[in-house]
Image 1 (tube, one colour):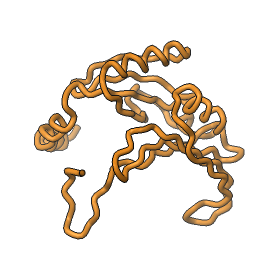
Image 2 (image 1 turned 60 degrees about the vertical axis):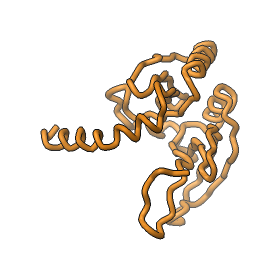
Image 3 (image 1 turned 30 degrees about the horizontal axis):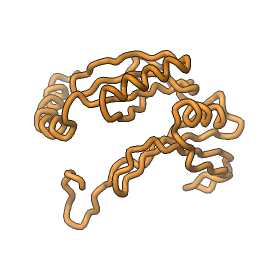
Amino acid sequence: MTNIPTEAGVPPVTGAHHAAFRCRNAEETRAFYEDLLGFPMTQALDIDAHPTTGEAVRYMHIFFDIGGHNGAASNYIAFFEVAGQGEAAPPFEFKRQWGMDLHFAMGLADHDALSIWRKRLLDKGLEVEGPIDHGVISSIYFHDPNGYRLEFAAQNGPQIEQFTNDSQRSHAILRSWVERGL
């Protein structure tokens, strides 16, 4: 069930299906997400043409199931390795300025799960930042072999209540930001 209002006759969005990123090496990426994190690879597509323009481009497109399926919504993280362009893949062209730039967050059930994941990642030799208390959520951060910053987040209270209660206030905060010209 969604609590997002829709116009009459417009079907509701069921949630995120996937987020897709470029990668340097599809096998290196697969090993990280499937072997280290335990996210099963559910799809590998060897594609030789751009899907919308038909332009010749060879790429491998891989999908990993990150869980949390809810009705029609699916939750995947996907990657593209373009043949012959591995080292040119972002974020290597992206100038990282702050830790909050370009990151992908995945939800966890609770703070116990956050602690277990933190220990697992540290035991696997990854650098982990956090947990960091952001008020609404607490998070840990780490990087994949492509340089993408990943986040595991656990709610610090009932999610629906927090985000519903903050909706009106959030619009006022944004309006104030815009009016100040920041």
